[in-house]
Length: 222
Image (cartoon, rainbow, N blue to C red; front, side, top):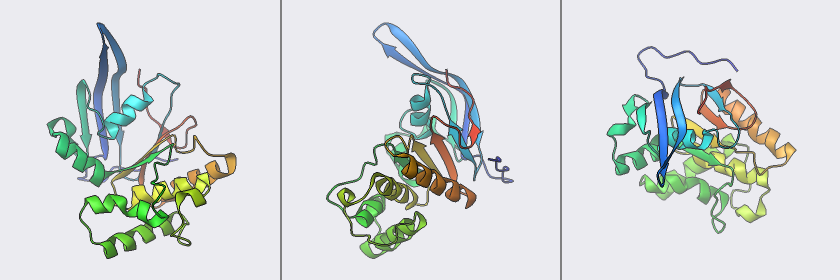
């Protein structure tokens, strides 16, 4: 998939410069990332691939503001995350990043639209606005009908589509999808990847952690 051109005067969504991450396990230092440099522009669809232990999860956690580099610079929409405290990082995650995980992470007792609107409750929106935006997000992933169904009444592919709608509902700068088809059958995998490609065609910035490339391959964590 072709890379999106940089927008004049607008910083990249993701700007990693010589990022390292080292963990201390007792007296042993484990180098999870060694000098990752990467820019992702608005509207790009990027796949990050690698074998188990190659640093994909560590890189995802840093991009998602769930962790910070040991050294190097990470800027999210021009903001150096090293300057942010825990509360600011939490706000960044909620405002700028839509997460899609392999395990769906839906609340069993909440209807599909109630799962989708959950991030908006943290932002203080009223119930009517939350419902309107949740239903709009569900329509984006082809689930505009039967919105009161519980997760247990949905297939795995439908549950992941609900999770994608929940990631979209805050209108984030990017979607960060960590092995989103890992628990799905072949048909559901095609459906979910097709939705991500359609969202990319609409201008969404998407970072996909996956065994198979669906976009520009990111250069390597060590």
